[in-house]
Each structure stands twice: as structure tokens, then as C-alpha cells.
Image (cartoon, rainbow over all chains, first blue to last red; front, top):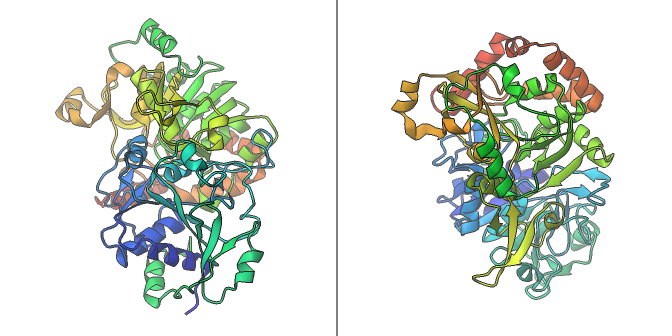
Length: 252
Length: 318
């Protein structure tokens, strides 16, 4: 069965949520992945969205575009204020967070603020929103992104959302005691981080993808595991559930 | 006022003769509270409950050199840039949403050096409003640490005096003026908000002057019958105006959904052409519409009714 790169991303990200009880998800692929996980591998999953919605259900064909609109409040259990929603994460209630960015570097730092210097950028991007908070405060964070060489840079121009900073213990030394970037899920494979150096490491490949292809699409030297399991391709059931939700194919 | 100056903020609040009685006034008079150079905080979030009617009136009154603070800035930010009304923006994010891409107007203003943009994490900006609402100089935060966001605003870090851990400190933001749109209020300014509260209550309490538009002015008896739903006390409000559809084409929880078709039109015919495109949009929708009823007539009664039905369905009442 054929599937788009975005569908693959959503399916793989959803599988990583197996057994998870709470996820802090932004709109688009992360929210679709969370909703898919709820219907498959994580029936007890509570979805939390930063606009202030806890436990919403998505209406097929009416997916939210912002994190704070009525579409993402549908059948929610709690609608707290935005500051309070993040404070649930700061207190330690929220397990997994999803983030993305225009750039990601070998230590999992993300940039969604500027290409070029902050005060005279070549490209001014939308900014952090809640990404900095999610990556700093959830138990663990999954980066979900397309795998492109211009995106996977040796060092981000601006650390909007801190991964492992300069590696080693630098994240903890900066005062970030609790969270960590656990995985980077891309359309080519699954990556993690070396336990000591915290440098990014290729840990699995999607069907039909070669190591060379991943290396080619990565702008820095990747660590590569000896064993590289091949992901099971998206199942018909997973794709059908996704397409039922995003009937307009707005995000997939 | 310097960030975190809680003494000056308190002095300004006490020095103000905040009227205790009826707050009802017109949009023109309410917007008249805003002065050139003010720090104006905007309620709602992105395209939810944005106080568009009063923001349009502030534009009609040709204010200049404003600082705008909003947690997620939507295209109202482009209006103020295109109108040359804003010098500095304080926010965590600026766009409409994924389908509409990056904001060309915002990009050109920041990349060209015409706009100071102070970026905070979403929580950090929320804590800045909350510190303001609490009347204290700062709050500690566990986010922002280690990131480059620490260096672009006025956040600081310190060793926690109790645990020795490194914590971030974000200074209170005390806006000169808050502009908010709520569901209902009595004439004394006691405000009720349905659905998402966003950051409106903290913004109201942190600000020296608070201007509110409400979908509906209701009786004092109705407010007294459901006081648990009242989010902002009347003593925090300076001016109140009844403006049905006061956030349209942005959404107002339970009452009307956002008009995404209009967003498409705004971007394709306006903002995708840069600031000049936005100025042409403003000419048509803001400067040539003396009041909010004229403005709404540009959308047509059918659209307003359809968006009201969509909202009812989404909150499970349709």
C-alpha cells in the first residue's frame, strides 16, 4: 500500500507512543500521531494541547490548524489557561512531548526562530511558541521532522529549543534537570543519542532507505548503530485511521 | 516602565482614579485611552477571541510607536506593522497557521530592521503576565534555560537560594493598556469568558488600564446568578463596550468559528503582497468602515450565521 512521507511520519510517531499515558502535541502531524496512537497502541493516552485543551477528541475532517481554537476543544475534559497548561508539564505530569523546527543539530537542539543572526536574520521564522517549554519540561521529547540536509545542520543558528546543548552534561549543567530528547523520527529512519556524548545516532531505517541516503541527507557526521532494524511499513489499518481523521489530506 | 518594576506598577494603579461605577462607553472613547508609545497587551490567542474591533479602532485613531505584547501573534500584528503603528513586539510566535505559511510582512519588518522583536517561550511570556497580575517583580521558571531565548529579552538566571539549582527568572510585564474581548459582562465590567481562558485574566490584572469589548452586556442579576463564571472583576476594568462579533473573523468560543475562507482571501489578496497589500486591506476593511456594523456587513449576514452554527456544533450544542 502506498503512503506519503507525512503519513509514514505520523504512523511511526504514533507507534512510539505505545503505552504512554500523556502527550503534549502540537497541531498537524503530532496531533494526528497522538490521535492514531489513541486508537491503536495507547488507548489510555490523554492528549494535551498548548492552547489549553486536555483530552480533546478530533472531529474527522475538521482538524484544528491552531493549538487554541474550538476544533481542538471538542469534547475536552479540561480547558485550563495556557500558562496553567504548561505548568502541568513543569510540575512533571506530562510524559511525552512532540516538537519540530526549521533546523535540528547533532545534539538535538532545534531552531524555529531565525536563519542567520537574531538581530539581522536572513529569515525570520515564527518562533518558539511552546516548543522551548515542551522540550524543557516533558519527561521525554520526540522530534518529528522531514529528513533534509538543509534542516539537519552541524549547529543551529539559534537554540530556540534546547536538546543536549553542546553534548555531555551541558543540558543538565544549564539547569535543565528533567527532560531529554529521546528520539528523532524522520521520514527516513529513527535516530537517538549516544548515552555519553549525546551526539545523534542512527538507530533504525524505514523500508527501502539506505544508510547512505540518511548520511547524504544529514549535514553532520552521524553515529551509526551496528544493528539497524528496518521499520515495519505502515499497515492498512493505520493509514485508514489517519485518512479518516484528515479527510481533506490537509496534513498528510 | 522597566521590566519587573512592581513598585512603579503599583504606584500607577493606585494613582489612577479607576471608576467604581458603570464602565459602558463607545469604541471610540475606549480606544482613546491608548496613547502613542504605550505598551498594549492583546488578549485571546492567535485567531481565538482576538479583540479585533477595538484594535481596528486603535488603528483608526492613528496611534504610533506602540509596543504590542501577545502570546501568539496572528495577522493583527501585520496590520500594526503595515500601519507603521508599532515599534516593538513581544511574543512567542508570529504567523496565522501552517496553511498560510510565514508572514511576509513580519519577515520584511524584522529582516529589514524596522521592528524590534522580543521573543519569549510561550510559558515564559505567560509567567511574565502572571507576575504582573500578582504584583511581584518576577517569577522563577524551569524553561528557557540553556536556550538562546535567555539572551534576547530581559530574562535572568540565578542559583536557587533553597536548592542550589540553576533557575530562570522572568520579569513581570506590566502593560500600560490591556485590550480584551469577552463573552459577556455586566455594566460594571464584571466579565465572563466561556471556553478557553487563554491569558486574559493575568493580562487584565497586570495592566494599568483595561479596555474590554463584550459580545453581550447582561444584567447585574445574571452575573450574580453565576458568579463562579466571572473571570475578571469589574474593579479591574476601565472601559467596556458591547460589540457583537467583536473578534470576527477570528473565533469566539461557542459563538462563532473562525472564517478560514477570509484568511485565505486576506493572505492571497493582501498580506502575500507585503505591507502594501495589507494597507489596501486596511483601507477597505478598517479605515472605510466607520463602525463595527459597517465592517461586519462586508462579510454578509449569511457568513456570520453559518459561522455561528459551526461553533454550536463544535461545542456540542448544535
